[in-house]
Each structure stands twice: as C-alpha cells, then as structure tokens.
Amino acid sequence: MRPSVIFITFLIYTAFLFFITWLTARRATNRAFFIGNKASPWFVVAYGMIGASMSGVTFMSVPGWVGQTQFSYMMVVIGYLFGYFTIATVLLPLYYRLNLTSIYSYLETRFGFWSYKTGAFYFIVSRVIGASFRMFLVVNVLQIFVFDAWHVPFEVTVLIFIILILLYTFKGGIKTIIWTDTVQTTFMLLALVFSIVFIVRKLGTTFPGLTFDVFHSGYCKMAFTDWHDKRFFLKELLSGVFIAIVMTGLDQEMMQKNLSCRSLRDAQKNMFSFSFIMVIVNFMILFLGAILFIYADRTGTSLPARSDDLFPMIAINYLSPVAGLVFLVGLISAAYPSADGALTSLTTCFSIDFLGMNKNERLTERQKVHVRYLVHTGFAFVLLFVIVIFRIINDRAVIDKLFTVAGYTYGPLLGLYAFGLFTPYKVKDQWVPIVAIISPLLCYFLSSHSEILLFGYKFGFELLILNGIITFAGLLILRKPKTNVSHD
Image (spheres, rainbow, N blue to C red):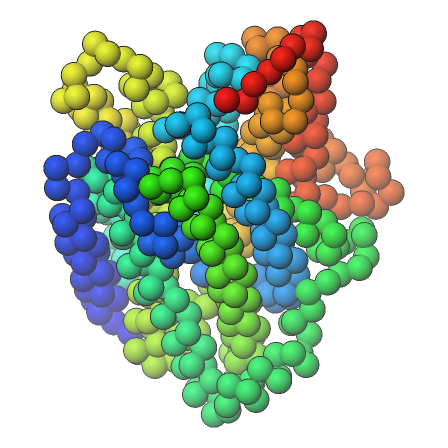
C-alpha cells in the first residue's frame, strides 16, 4: 500500500473528528471542558469508554502478545468485571456525593494538603507515561509505513500527531471527547470484525472452521496453574480487579467521563453496561491474535521481531489493500481516545489540583480559559518528549510495559484510597509523600530479587496490589488517634 494512501486516510479521518469538534465545542465553557455540563447521556459515555479503555495498546499489542501469553489475559479481563462493580458501588457514589470535578480533591478532605498533592502527582505521572505508551504505537505505525518512505524524522511525526490532538481538544474538552469517543469506538469495532473476516477469506476457510482450529491450538489456554508463573490464573484474576479499580476508578481521565453523566444512577448504568461489553470485545481481540498466528504459520510468514508489529505487518503487507485501510482506521480510532482523553484529564488535574482554578475567585472566566490553554499546550509537549524517549528504550510488548509501570505509579493511589475508605484514621499528612516514594522503591527491589527471596516466585501485574498494601501499611504507621471520620 502506498504511503500517500495511508496518509490521506489518516487526514480524512482526522478532518471528520474536527467536524465533530466544531459541532460540540461551540460556546464551550470551563464547566463544559471539565465535566461536560453534567449533561452527557450515560449510554453514549458507556459506548465511547470502550475505545478509551482499550486504546491502541489493546488493539495492536494484545493480538501479538497471544504468542507469548496465549489467552491468559482473559483472566485479567474477568477480574476487570469485579473491579468495575467496585467502582460503580463504592467510588462513584462517593464522587457524586462530594460533587467532585477532580477526584483527588477527596484526599484533601480526608487527609490533608500533602496527601491531596501526592495523589494528583501520581495520576499525572501515570497518565503521562500511559498515554505516551499508547500514542507511541500509532505514531510508530505511521512512521514505518508512511513517513520513513518520505524521510521524515520520527520526532516530526510525533509533533504532527500531537498538534492535531491539541487542536481538536483545545476548546471542547470532555464535552467534545464524549462524542468523538463514540465515533472512534464504532470504527475500531468495525475494524476488528472486518479484520477477522479478511483473514478467514484469505485462508480459504470458514469462521466455524477457524474457530475450531483456534480452540484446538496452543493459543487458547486461559488458566495457568503453576504459582511460580507470571501467568498464574489467580494472580491474573486479582490483578485484573485492582487494575480496573486504579486505572479506571482512581483515574481522572476515566472518571471525568462518568462524572459528566446527569446523575449517579446514570453513571452506574454506564459502568455496568460498559464492563460486560469490554469482556466480549477483549475476547474478540485475543481471538484475532490467535488467527494471526495461525495465518502466519500456514502461509510461512516470518514473525516480526517485535510482537506489537504482527497485526499491522499482516494487515498492510499480506492482506488486501482494503484490509490494510480497515486496520489503519481501527488503529487510529483506538489511539485517538487515549490521546485526547489524556490531554483533557491532565489539564483538568493540573488546573484544579495544583493551580486551584476552581477556588480562585480573583481570575475571571476569560483568564481561567487562557490559563487552561497554556496548561493544555504544555502537557501536549510533555507527551511529545516522553514518546520520543520511549521509542529509544522500548524492548517488549507495550501492553506488558504499560501494566508493569501502572503497578508502580498507581499503587500509592490504591493504598491512599483504600486507607481513606476502609479505616477511620487521619494520618500525619506531611509524611505521606515519603511513604508514596518508599513503597514503589520497595516493590522494585522485591520484584527484582523475588526469585531469590521468595523461592522462585516471579511477580506479574499483582505488583500493583503489593504496592498498595505497602502504602496502606505505611499510612497505618502514620495514623493519628482514632476520630470519627465522615466520607461525605
């Protein structure tokens, strides 16, 4: 497929998003930017969150990951269900009762200034790294299949992508993203279905026949019973529960969309419906991964050095040009929600939690908008820098790296919220940042030496749980004498 065709497809799709932005961002205020005027239909939010949750990482990295981990990721996905239930029944009622714009404001009410800033800081670090990982995948595909042929440096490709996202999220914020996510989820799901259809036709078989082959191959194993293994099913299941809680329930980007719903009841309906659809879609992506490997085996196609490149390589180089375009649109559709949502949530978090924009009565609405524009632009260039660095150090599947980093950066948030919700204690607030630094460092040490210290045990994604437990224990040491604490 010619680079010009790919690039034109990218531009047409982006232009369509700009049209939606124009429709939704007219007369947008700060309130519309941050919480969509609390008027978002719950079913639109639920549908759009599928694309935002999965991102380009799931769409492109998970299929290639099947070769190393088979279907074990489904145990993580099943764990998500329990995590989403906890969010709907515990966290969302709290956020709506406190009428929060930034969810980290809860930590200030519960513990104090330093706990609040610590929580907001860890979100910013987590979201900058996570969003950069996700955007890297899309930009890298554009670089390999388009811009390398035109001798355009990777840094320039990243800059183009960042500027486009910056422009269409600049004004509308969450009000715009709710609707662009819906469009992007639709294209991503269509690309997923059509990719499976194209492979079935290319192999000259039927869907039932290929399904039979998948379930009799070595790729569909879900439950690994060796407790030493990173893929041990119980570790994966528990990790899924807490990954969902921290990467959705304690994440400003995901909760900002829920908080834009008209009521708590609507937000809960959104979360329950979204969670079950996510299980189905993730299974389809794992199934796609299995048939990609079956296709490579039957056609004698050499596997790429990086597993993340398997899907784009087959879709663009070995299937029909239409299949390549379908893949490209699906990838862009999966990646844009990660980028636009990240920029909006980072802007919200920094503006509210560090600049105190919601409490500053000296600034006019116009001045607040100007400050928000500056923050929005600043984070766009932070993401650009991190993506470029990540390309230099990337050495394994991005989905693996993403969850590993989340274990270190979201762990302190898990410990802080768990301590706040399930104990009656206040803490010595000024020492909380020290605990939040020590906990990830201890986790890194234990993870690096676990096989020696823990009789051959290898940490997987459950490192997140350990991080939360260590933070919780540290806060327990810092507790003040018991007082009557109200969460509202």
